[in-house]
Length: 492
Ligand SMILES: [Zn+2]
Image (cartoon, helix red, strand yellow):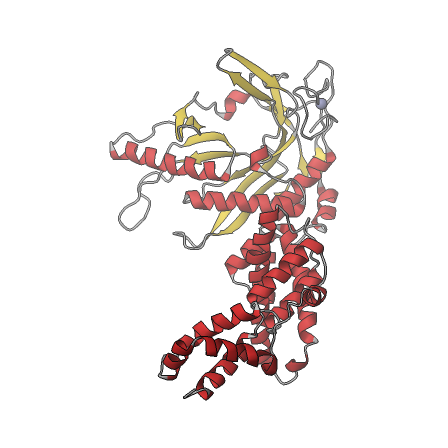
């Protein structure tokens, strides 16, 4: 944040260090401009007001992971404040919620300490020390563990969309301090007494799952305290013990007075006004808007849109593929007779078909081979052509799967693969007749039962025919032919 040490994974502890981040006397910190720009961008994405003038402050505390004895942070004038993020939580007790953003400030991360119980020693790795860290403080607007989790997932997606961070919680690129308190309500759900009671803070929770567990655990623990008439009287800090799946009491939280904040004398205030105007013009489409567009333009339901937009590369692929698909559809000859309503219905059917093939079938094949949408070989154009073939009945689901698998292996276009492996559906009645006659002759008892009214046996014959033709019989033509020949063989 204030020196030029690399911000990347290191091969060994304490290799990315310098006099500035180690806090040597006389070293002068210089703010990282990119980090300031990214924080402004993130603030704008969260609907925040960006302060035209901002400054850094020293936050004093003593801990081995902080060699200067203070952290350079922001106290009274953060870069961004007063924003919000809307989240959607279907089938939860609130369908949607607006979470207020109190502020976003920029600071340097502390180093990492490792406690060795066996050696009774603490080791410190300063590689992480000095990394730019944007801290987002929210209003007490969450009403469930689920809302907190969805909010964090949305924050991660926004960070990735903006390219400001990969926000991978497993790698510590995003961490969460969870604050929980209960509210007393009457039978109608209205709050009784104090709006907010003393809370519990659990610091540095580092996975979505843990955030959810921590909140659920704290709700249960505090509920018990309330039920025994001993609700939390003071704000406390607890730590999450992942092995035991419980929170445990830690030192009492210092309030901000203990930090003895004062302005960082080595860094002058920053004037952001012209920077903000430039950055505003670079704000890309945000995940919520993209999901809405996938619902409106591509007829997906919310869950499908969410699933695709969750992965930015997959969403980019889908979008390009849909536009190729519309081009293919427009070129089809049988569309001239359809009116607008019928056309939209047809488009809707095919786009949904494409979505299913993309997320479940291609998704499954990629997962088996350890591929991502970016590392696999199928182009958007070939995928769109493939979907057109499935939609028009040129490929059955089974044949479609083998074609898709070969597309994935070779990157070839579907037409090529169908020819090479003769996977076309047989929809010519003459070609199918001898196979149909053969299976009817081989199953006289079933044929007789069909003729005496057991209509559902048509499925049995269709199955036999598929076996006979290696799955290549066009199901529509085949059942028509089967019905005719079964009825026509009466008395044989
Ligand atoms: Zn450094």
